Amino acid sequence: MTDPDRPSPTNDLHQRVKAAQDRNSGVSTKRSPPTSFAGSGMGAGLRVGVDLVVGVGVGAGIGWGLDFWLGTKPFLLALFIILGFVAGLLNVIRTTNQSFKSSGTDDSAP
Image (cartoon, rainbow, N blue to C red; front, top):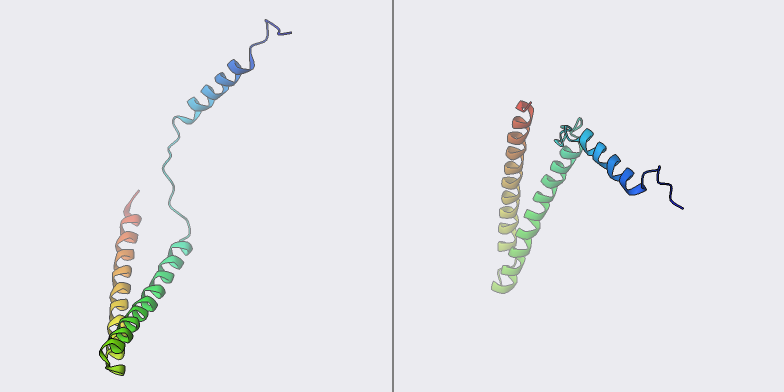
């Protein structure tokens, strides 16, 4: 049933795999830089928006809880909303500074 002149299928497969590995051994696996920054820009913009909303939301939640607990209804809510907004702005500034630093180092790389 088997032809002695014909090589076995597994030996042929091993030889083809070895040849393919030899061809690809010199190919670098380093990724090329993206040609479009639309995805990263959209992600940064979304993060900025979420930082602002979450800052105000957490501040409002803390203020409402403290007002409910201490009985000072409007005062602490307003104060913590303002503090949450300031915290959100600080997060936005931190995010933009990080994105400017990382984009500056990416452009100088060969």
